Amino acid sequence: SLDDPEVYKLIGSGETTGVFQLESGGMRRLAKDLKPTKFTDISAMVALFRPGPMEWIPDFIAAKENPVKIKYLHPDLKPILAESYGIAVYQEQCMMIANSLAGYSMAEADKLRMAIGKKKPELMKKEKEKFITGCVKNLYSHTTAENIWGLIEKFVGYGFNKAHSASYALIAYQTAFMKAKYPVEFMTAVLAAESRATTGPARDDKMSQAVEECRRMKIKLLPPDINKSDVEFTIENDMIRFGLSAIKNVGTAAIDSILAAREKEGEFKTIYDFVARVDLQKVNIKTLESMIKAGAMDKFGKRSAMLVASPDIMENAHKERDKKESGQVGLFDDSDEGNTFHSLPEIEELTRDELLKFEKELLGFYLTEHPLTRLITDLAKKVSHRIYELTPSTRPIVTGGIVTQVKKIVTRAGNNEMAFVRINDLTGEVELIVFPKVYAKTRDLWVNDRIILVKGMAREKEDRMTVIVDDAKIYQKT
Image 1 (cartoon, rainbow, N blue to C red):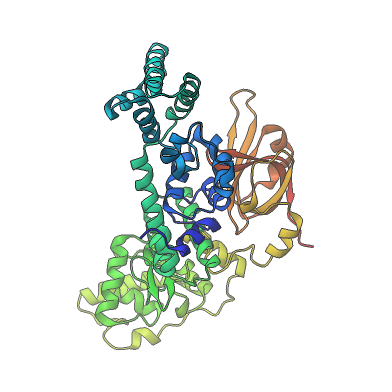
Image 2 (cartoon, one colour):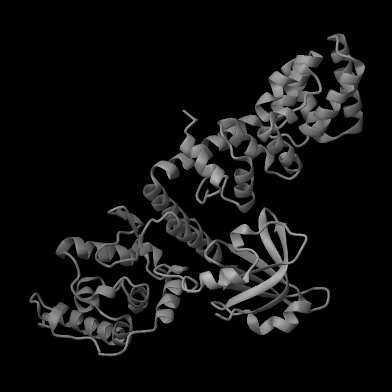
């Protein structure tokens, strides 16, 4: 069935990260405003959330909230338009109006749909005459026929195919159902899908959003672990364990070698045991350092010590491997000596911020903790809007967050520098547009991992919120 209250509650909350068709900022706002309670509401959301039909969204929401506001040009339109609160959302509804009121066959009604879609004046005039004649023949007044033609003419050009809309809505409902009923399994699948979907900043953004959603849902995320992780994300005691493939610079061949060694002889005991057992042609120094930085080897010692020692460890491992292959007995033979003979240098561990930067570098996002976590309460006091609260504004807003991406460009017109900057505040991420005049006086601010406050105008661009920056400054904790 498609009537589970828990599913509609989830969609209506706007917490739809990972839900097909419903995870954009605009769709979240529509879901929160509309509060869908039946499947046809979701289908209509999909159909309405496009250029053109968007202008009817307020009327649609108002009609759902208060059925008294639903108005039909004629009572005979009610059976056709009732499911969408009096608004013609689908092409098929316009076709049914032509069929029911003007006596069109469904084949003729489809030709009408195509004629209006092409917006050719001569075709339109011909179809209008045919439609009004058909309505009058079926005992509707000429004025009613004219008004209903106006309705069709207005909607059919933008109307969405109902079958498409219902198909999308069905997948949206199914994914929302999985998220509501099986949250850990669902978010594991989302993380796996997003990690494979693309590369670069877009991949990191989507992964970061999924990680933040897990935190919001109180799902614990476990870091990559050389002895516990599989290739992909896995479920471990109702927690999600990161897979080795999530670590940058760790390829399929390296992972296959690691998992084969682990399956053959059990868990790795030390970093020395690790390099002695894996295929060093597949697991190179860059792979090793990447896994150390990402925290996958934390049980073997301090990251700082392992990073300092790793070049020597790898060099010695290669020498020992060569000796073994030539028949000489080396340190890494079948005894346990290779696991205990060496010890890591005694040096101070990296700072918390340095460890977090390594996570960001190798995973694409902050996992164990976000640099903002300890500052978020104070930051919230200094802004008018958290990022997830942003809506198109007519007055300046103040928001803030940590800089995650800076893209500088030179304008064609005046050959002046400007920038597109992305910031994150744990509730979401937004693009800042810094035009040349503002950029000239703030250029030194735009540095990755810096926490800033910005003042500007919130705008909607291609279904995403942006902020046109008027001024900016470095955040200072009070």
